Image (cartoon, rainbow over all chains, first blue to last red; front, side, top):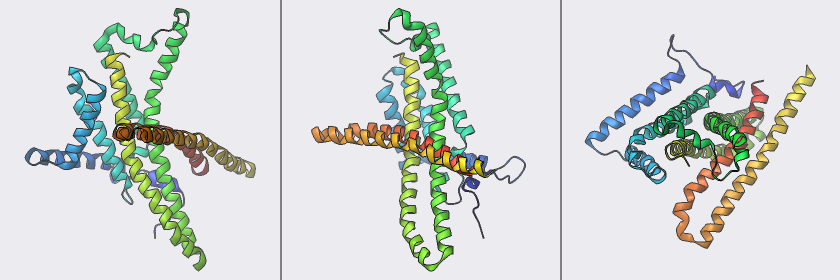
Length: 236
Length: 76
């Protein structure tokens, strides 16, 4: 029998060998799935990969309307496909939701912010710091506004990853808590077992909501990444 | 020791008050969507991605509170 004593147990890491645990197993599985699907698109078109590619290219084209926008297509496609495939892997029963590990998601978002900052410094040299000076502000206020804008710019690194991590974490916890409530109801008496059957409807609705959120969060993360890229490339 | 456990449960309950704000935020987003689509139904395809973006941004603030209360209940 498999008993759940604590809903946070599903996020623990189990080591198969010295280095292989369920976390990097999912990442390995993602690489295998992506390579297989990308390899098959060379010979015959794949609906899922083409759809993802069209989605990310459309996002870039609408917000980055410069000639250099082609350079960022692969990066944004990789971000979107990584998040959506690992999110869907996490939604399988007994699967591991690797996006619930806050170290991992905040690591990704911090990497993105450092990368975009370096890109902006390379493109605009010292003019990059005009990003932190709002248009039309009085001169006396500029030194205060500079630090406020700098704070809000650097807090993006935390908030971007925390949003994804908190969504996945609380979604999986909610499913687990309702499921263990149904289990407890079923083991109490015949009357509560009937009530537990009714709760299966609630569990199904929550699960469908989590499936929708798994897709929406990958989409939102991609939109915000493109927006941050747009900020440093276009400077306002 | 009992008073610490009681404080943990009280804190977890108080942390869910933040969901009020996210509820109001989601309601504002979809009210604005319905308002604008009823004025101009042809804009539905353009406005829906923005509505989903606004929904998930305001929903995530509520989920931060929910995460705090779950962590207080099960991890602390």
